[in-house]
Length: 333
Image (tube, rainbow, N blue to C red; front, side, top):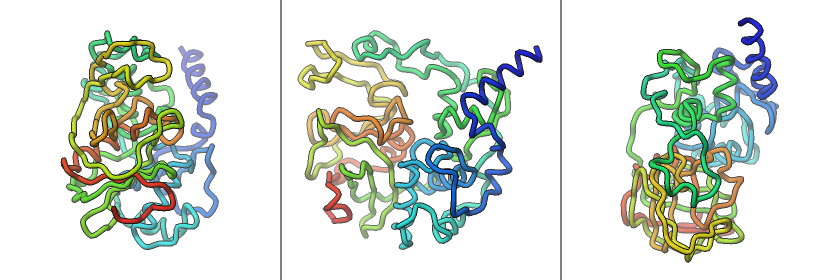
């Protein structure tokens, strides 16, 4: 039994060596500004703290992984710009002070796994091809670990590293998570949305043109680029079906007939769909939060499931959405 436990911990250390080396709740909660964070490939306590605070402020870093990667840097820049701070560096003492001033709550907190977290049903395997998905009753999570990580906006790697030796499959078990759910509910008065095709970002503004929210995104691809110009939100749907049209001619999809994929977090459009005026174009969730800003989309705008939900629950039909290139960023539609 001892050997088995040691083996589990050792394997976890191999999978997440930087995270397993002294990253704990107290270190993250007490983290202070550092001029030299660990970098893009290593977990840093201060970056975990910054990412959680950004998430709470609705300036999303995407998946909270504790690394100063592309999405975290984009979120920090947007947060700084919204507060009139210099944004030539990802993190400065002024940005840190503004971030930590947004909330006094611990950024890592204990959570007791519930029956709902482990009830499932869970998929044994997520099919790689769309045609294989159409026969499934639901595009569910593949494990409690995936479900819990997404519930708290975290990478599975960071969740596992904070809870070495735990399998996340037993109700009543206490674990450590990013404290992103304990935040005051507030309705965002979104007047317009800006999708930047070059920077791979989505921004929401109020009627006075103040930046309310920021989300990293995957915007189109070379094969199927996203549109340019102005659109309006025509539909907002939670837990959407995905309807494939053979006219899309997606790579890897051989079907010549339309088909429908049932709802679920691992549905191709995730947990939320914000339909725009163009056929088949929308802002939506994704089954792969770690690939936002990194993988291509089929012409749509892909966010993490929780970011798509945050935007979808705050936007109204008729809201203007403009697709811009980098040179146009910041101009009012």
